[in-house]
Length: 161
Figure 1: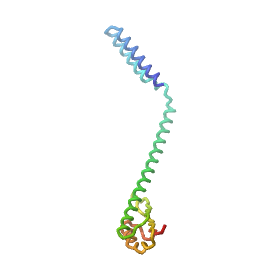
Figure 2: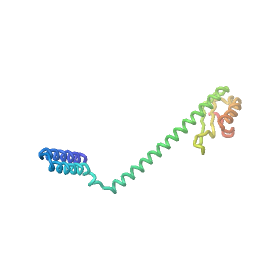
Figure 3: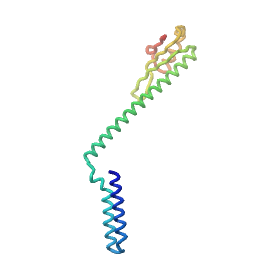
Figure 4: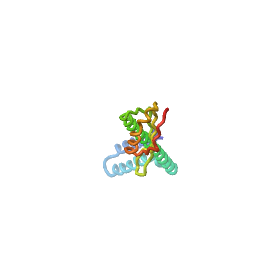
């Protein structure tokens, strides 16, 4: 279809060029140039005559719907990545805080929740220890987690693997 349109435009332009070169200057040439201008406009706009506007409208609606779905998926992925990043940052902070207090956890997992103010905040933490002797040293860490991150002691789960 595109090649037919290009051939039509090129053919019209060649025909107009030949016709205007054969006519002498004057009123006849100006009238012919006007007619050639109309022919060129018709050649350029010819694809619009075969355009099905109902199909075009449906296609546009379909593409808009697909764009919305892609945008929603991207937003969901961004939100999930933001959440994971924030959980990892909180986990790293707790891990470092524990090490500074002489407790070396094997793993720290923080769970977050979306606030009504529009950000992720920590709601619970699971700390896995390889040695039960660390549990007695965990009291200062529990209070630090509660006071600095707002995770209540009741939502801090300390366990052995």
